[in-house]
Image (cartoon, rainbow, N blue to C red; front, side):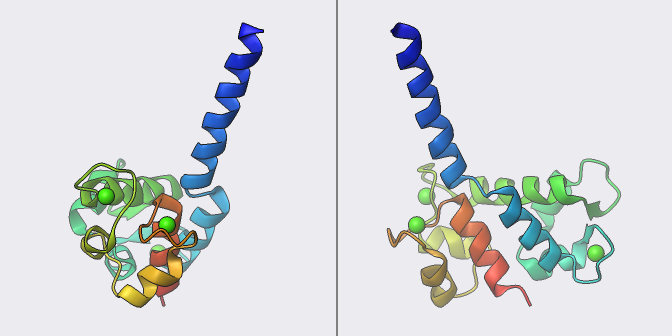
Length: 133
Ligand SMILES: [Ca+2]
Ligand SMILES: [Ca+2]
Ligand SMILES: [Ca+2]
């Protein structure tokens, strides 16, 4: 019985995790948009256009080859989210999101899928993807 409860608790956790963390599909879509020249990596100018700051780019560029592969790209996004999330509440309000590269309140509102006035990591990535050319 105790074990079953434990398993239930674990399932609830992973469900929340899956809901708020960007899915692989969301990352794929964002990466494809950010990699404007389809080179398979996101360079610094591509990252800047996507709204990733130089600092976050450098932090995430583990191989130090001035390009982000898909994993590094996801890391850069999560660094930027954590950096902008000054009150550490796991979501970005408009002021925080605007520091994290979300360019307009319209984009912010459109990406706020559950209409709570804040962006969770998945909504944040959706906002960056939506505004990318
Ligand atoms: Ca590229
Ligand atoms: Ca916050
Ligand atoms: Ca939201």
